[in-house]
Amino acid sequence: ADSGSRKIDRVPVHLRIGYTAFKGSKWFLPSGSLEIATEPFGSIVTRKIQAGAREKRKASFEVGLMLPVLTYHFDAGLRLYPYIQGGLGVMYHDFQGYDLGGGFNFAEMVGGGATYFLDDNLTVNLGYRFRHASNASLYDENRGLNTHTFTAGFSYLLPQ
Image (cartoon, rainbow, N blue to C red; front, side, top):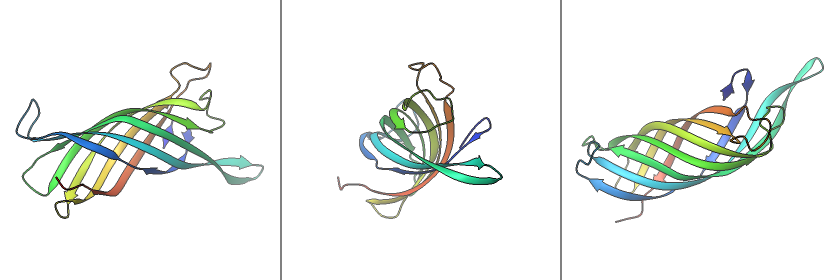
């Protein structure tokens, strides 16, 4: 993650709970499906700090909820479905030294990737997300923090 010269390392864990709003023929977008989801998340966050002549790592955390997350899966007629997504959410963190004001922040996310169906109910997912977090001027300090995240995971889809 990077916001100017402010660098952090994150290990995020997301749980996604979604509902397919429609699936099938062309709408105003190419054939595919629109998923509406919520994502509770938590991350361990570390950053390097100078401690005298040595460098050491300082640990922090963040927890939050993305709601809604909208994902459009494009139907290419294969087992591979490219997707685009975006979402809004809230989060709490204990970052210090980043001029973010208080611990409560809002988060906006956009991204994309691909989902590959191993069978009718199990998928492998790879993607990229850009996230901006800031407090929307709730506090005097509000520099915000941008993160770039590569994602990988599995999804189990309930039978129809």
